[in-house]
Length: 225
Image 1 (tube, rainbow, N blue to C red):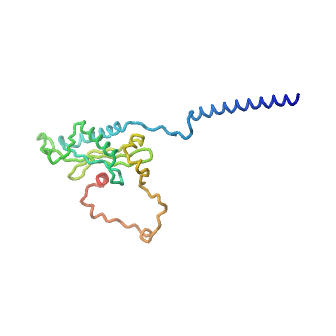
Image 2 (cartoon, rainbow, N blue to C red):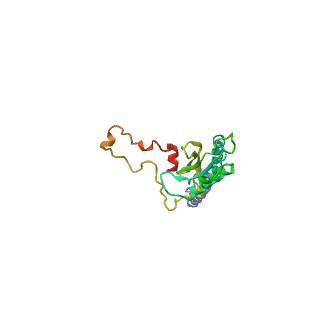
Image 3 (cartoon, rainbow, N blue to C red):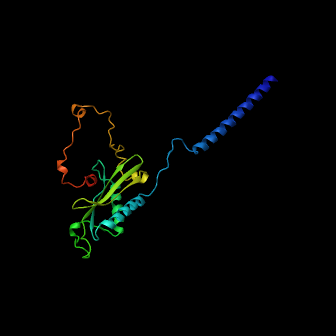
């Protein structure tokens, strides 16, 4: 009799344990969203790239409206990746979208400004000014940081500029050479401590800048070079 009672008690405890484990599993799945824990932790930003680029072009156009003489031709330079000479599909799409929107706002985007008339549209207006649209971008872990500017050809004066970010998602990633080269070269030292040398342990040594006195402004150089 005692043996039978012991068996019944053991079976009851086992059934209760299985039920408890099942309930715990369901609660755990509810907490985790019923998906594997190796899934994406953050939701991908799917904001269309064209919307962000058009907004940036609008900001630049608003600045040009007040500063650029009517009829001024604007040539376009392919936007570049900072620290690299590589031309990517992302740069092509980015450049085309920004230039296209500026043209839609009524500005003269041209392929060759040398063939464009430079006479003032009216005697009361300033003569047209040859300009160039240029830009640069950097790829980060989650975003792509972009800078674009329209500057004069004669003296490099910036008439309109804007900084903005585009999400690094599946669509923008497809326009970058990340598949072929998954390692994006960092802009900081990641190779370890820099060994001290006799030249670096002393006082600061200024660099030679005599060759840049007659060059364009630094901001423009950073974009074009």
